[in-house]
Image (cartoon, rainbow, N blue to C red; front, side):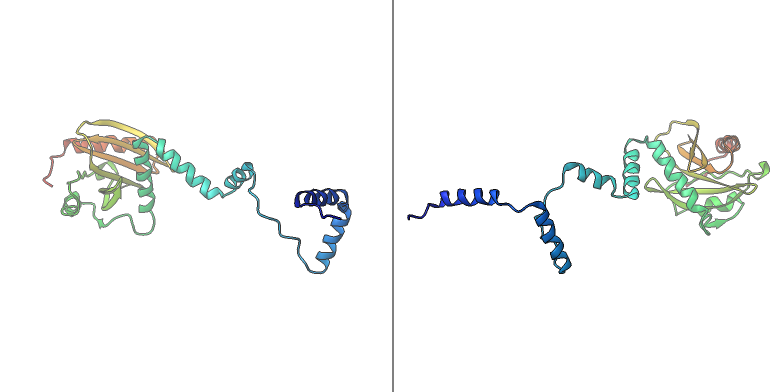
Length: 226
């Protein structure tokens, strides 16, 4: 008898294999016996998970990554002044940690102001508010918005007030604006070619009063050479 060709033989094998396929119970019993004998299940070829599984994996990547991504997105759409206020609040918090509050300790403006000479490319205005119960206690250098700034430290009772000062991008003056960041109040204004940020845990009205008084003293003080 002549042997069938390859195509006919293949069709015959597939048909017979389908007709005599073992029942599912037999397959499960064979797998169970293999497991008892210490043999693992057959290795299945890898397959690509459905798209929803990738989305689920991304969603479960971690709260930290999701938070960082949301912060990055918020910074992209946040107005420039609000981004700056976040940096100012961060600098205030850092100053309250350990011994970072002041590089020079003095209540004398004639000591504090010259201390900045050679350390900054501008001369910050320094006013004395001791008579109003807001004594100057010192100053330090800080770094905000990609540049070095002057940080003047005042006190109101047990409350610390950081007054950050550096040159404004424009000579136009701007009235004080009250903001709140990280549980602290901030007041921002520009005058005399300088911008100032006052930040403290004082309540809003007290910090605004400090800002108003400081602005008046800055305007009345004679400009000193850099």
